[in-house]
Length: 343
Length: 279
Image (cartoon, rainbow over all chains, first blue to last red; front, side, top):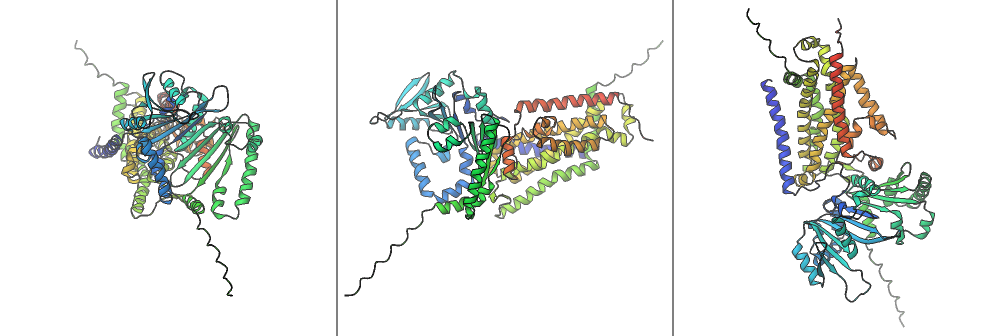
């Protein structure tokens, strides 16, 4: 090996070592965010979710908070969002913009019915457990031991119909909160009950959704429809849909894709036709409105086999326009009083 | 009667391969092909420098559909567009097919084959030299592009993806190189066949619905990419959502299998084939 070859190898290897070393140190200091294995099938918190989950949603709060879109929206709605977040921080001791990395929300199944079960939220981040416990106790909450896990529970004393809520720290930096039964369910899963990673159908969809964006929802359509969230007229006209996946990537703007998995191919064909009609109608109605035309024209209908998909892109300029439309308009001046005729 | 001095023992397969590697590495590094290698890997670095300069002057270097694209996303896009779709397969074709073809063309294969080492060790040594030579040019180029494009504040968040990128690019070089080493050892016009495979078969098979994509290397390499497919339009978003990627473990096993099997077949081809030099 000649001298210049050795020199080249040392220079190339040096760049690699310095680059990797710098990145490794930065990642170590930053807590190894996003340390997921390649091709991971969704967040690791799925191992705490019961296998009968009917709706699973994920949001990478850190990425969304850091996104250009969020910065833009923050300047548009400064006071309103700060009020809500400040109230949440006062009640839970958690500053969402600083303490939370990502959130997984789950609706379990209600036994024997297609309805949604109680809600559960798992948040990964940095939490002051002592402060959170103090806040719960301060509001009249109680602490109990459930299967070796400290469980904080709370029920409004003056409202008998209120659902009892609970909260627990499943592991350092992972908080589970929601309906009492749901939080107990996740502790059951932790102690051996079947978890979502064993539900192959759900995991297949979660993996697809997780690959496509920083916020997504995977839901059984009957669970979504059972609570009256889909108008009954529309529901009667829609073909049989099994699963719905909504994937979005929030950065400068929003790119989103909605994918429906129908019972069979003919249902998918019917759904495509229904959506095609709706798209045509939307294009017709927004033809005169430049601010909406771009968004509607960006919608693409696709899919093959049992899948039907809709993708759309909302650039930040369109969000500016929409925000402008949504801004409260100044009230028209009161009509001038009729001049009183002189006597 | 005096005992005949014993002949030195023949080097083992591994020793032979290491000797050929040591010899071939310098030869490969300072060849004309390396100029091409530097040009193709230098282009992304140059673009990254330009983007950095533009960004430092307060202008957003890239917008897609009016949306400003951040440095990490631009880096992901460059990994897809430059490295995965072009540089890795092209280097695999040019270097892999030339491992034996160059020796035949230069009529130096006779000298190599008369050495007391197994023919297969010659191929393996040259393959290892290719791997080191290309990796040590491509991977530092990726490192430079990464640190030029991604702000330091985002390094913690994106480091894992970056490390995966480096690993999968090295794996891609290994897989394409081994496949085209076989093509170079077994076929008469290996470069043409290699280019047809990379720019013909792989491009078509990846777009055709069904199982054809499983017979490409790109399918398994691209399934490991931690970045979203570049958003050339909404159609690409749809493609990324609907593409049925194999699990990571399957991809790793298939790529390792491609390296192992094709290299073994290439060694067998070199050891059994009779190379007739044109007069």
